[in-house]
Image 1 (cartoon, rainbow, N blue to C red):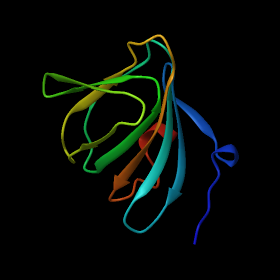
Image 2 (cartoon, rainbow, N blue to C red):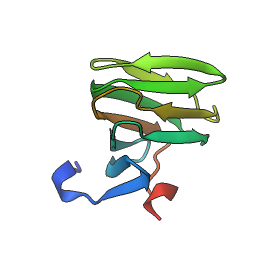
Image 3 (cartoon, helix red, strand yellow):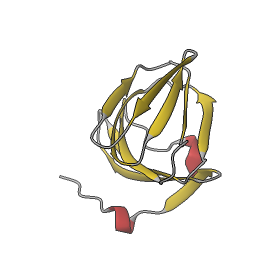
Image 4 (cartoon, rainbow, N blue to C red):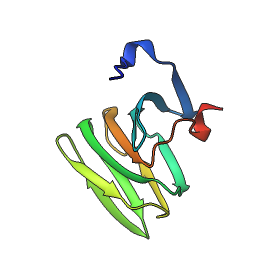
Length: 112
């Protein structure tokens, strides 16, 4: 069993105001922590990985196929692989949560 603590991992500012930390990675999935500052946004992108997540603080607006989906504390979501999507923090508080990717993303491009 692998145990990875957020406090032990390097946090990377992937885009302005969006901080990500790669956590545990298994054979079939990986997990990352995210933190969006107020007004921070991840531009539209896609990847082969199915992405499931959980918001535990703040409100995040996802932009998927021209539609907006708002998720707040206690909400979870799934974004199918190869689906263009982006996300924005339009609220007054930081957004914090976790994402799980399958297949795993052991070396995501934001780490570079």
